[in-house]
Length: 585
Image 1 (tube, helix red, strand yellow):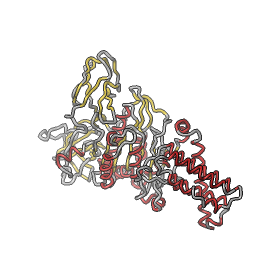
Image 2 (spheres, rainbow, N blue to C red):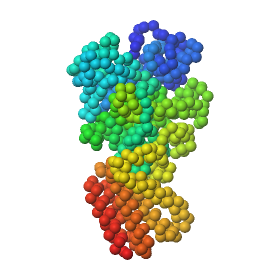
Image 3 (cartoon, rainbow, N blue to C red):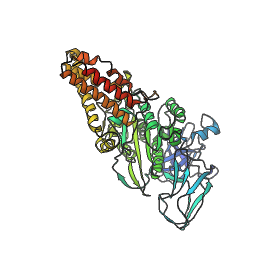
Image 4 (cartoon, rainbow, N blue to C red):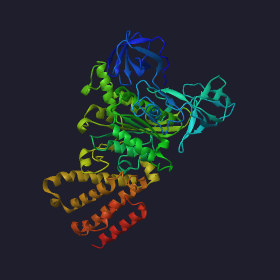
């Protein structure tokens, strides 16, 4: 958004006070959520409270050296994002300022009060119409396409807030995003650029029940705790447990058409790693660069706190725009705790009544509003699209009883609980299988039965039951030791060990193991079940448990995950396990 009022015009109002990211002004004729420009430098802000003649503004930039008496100018428009070709490959801050463009202008350290459009207004795009003169179009209808990247076809739509009509003219060729490509008989000109308020959800016809999994390529998620396309998930965990790496893995490998990654209040070095790594990654689906279907929003912990509050809305609005084209979008928010902390800081400066642990009383409502914008939708143009939202939560000290985690759990249907103890034991991803859950299993089972294996639910349930039994036995082991257990329980612990090592652990840095397709996930689970079935048969035939555990075929189960030609290797392992155990009785 560019400044709407030149600096030499009379100011609408003057600053009355400044307290961190919160400023008050008098004499400002404004509505709630209007964008204003504060001070001589024109710092962008948003109206968050109006009381009589006093208007309160949250400022999206550092307010040091801003003093009372400086001018405040109102744009009369809400905080909006530019939508159109050119958002993919881009890296934005929390209010959709393109960081690469600003860096070219002023280097690594950005000046205050600077601004740039969210999409390049000068670049031309090759527009190909999909409608003809005389056709009738309605709000949301696709009127043409643009090859935005090597991977994604950008579908130019009639804006949702524009009434339809008959196409009076439409052109083919190269255009900038602001040039008219289509005219309606109502006199409406349509370009490739749209603007949309970030705090307002884009309209849809209906929200449907999701029945297709978002395949993540991570065994513990796909195998035990799947998320649907259009689903919501939370990844809570203490410092160092792997939240960011887990989300980066999902962003890299999830089978979504578009990825929107929001670094909300995270450390700068983590976002630097994302920004450096993603352009070098190859998309496993297309073989093209991963950034060709990715939009990054970087709002690090040293950036102004108010912009952190807005960045999740910027991200979800961009996601909704691509959903309207009929794409499946995966949005990663890392982390919603930092977003909640920004709300808490602003709320305290407004002297609002605090809720639990100082968070504002409307914390749960804001979280719900955000996650409710996820889902599988029938769009107003008749297409289907989805937004899957995965939010990381950073509870202080790993305490899952704190307000952000608890309020998030009431909303999301998939919970991947990260465990510091597992991380300390170098078990990654450090997702605690005893505390995690997914409420999408039953509605996704038909897809897995049809596309992976008919007995997928049975094998998965066997894995869950075995791990549950191991958890109970571990309490006894700590008291009396493993050798004091009956042979069948010792064998259960051995089977569970292979489940943990061969199935639940996954090396994000290994070229082969970093991504595991569902078929491979199933083969690993079924191979371990084969070992379990054969081992218990041998035990019942009188073979000592020590001899069962000593066969050299079983340790090869741990190598399936890192084997590229896994089908033949897995069959060989299963045959070796069967022959070696049956030889003993």
